[in-house]
Image 1 (tube, rainbow, N blue to C red):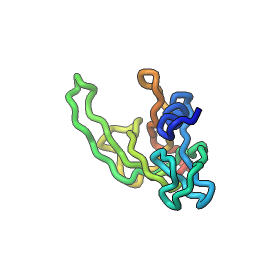
Image 2: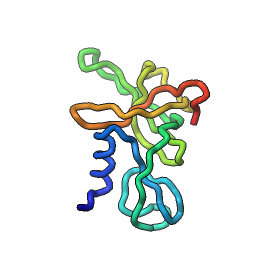
Image 3: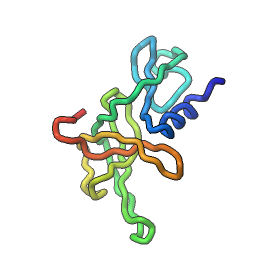
Image 4: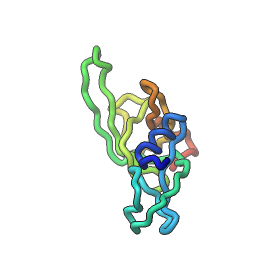
Length: 127
């Protein structure tokens, strides 16, 4: 049975694996999950483990009341593989997340579903 690209991506996350696609024709990485390569139109994209290394491209702080969980950040992350994704950076105050910050992904579980979150990369682990 063929899973849609989005269903496959979520199944990998649910299993604790952060995977993105790579085109067998033009060799470009692809994110968000797709059925065809947006660069060359080829089908049959392959799933590969993402390095998880990236750099914060942009960030914003979402303000919430303390009883609703407090402030959090939303960030666009440029992955080492050349794709950009939206996520959150944990381990820093939301206001401390800065453009250019090197980050490392990990798969977290929330309500039984996997999701990609980031934390500051260790020195020497830069993307």
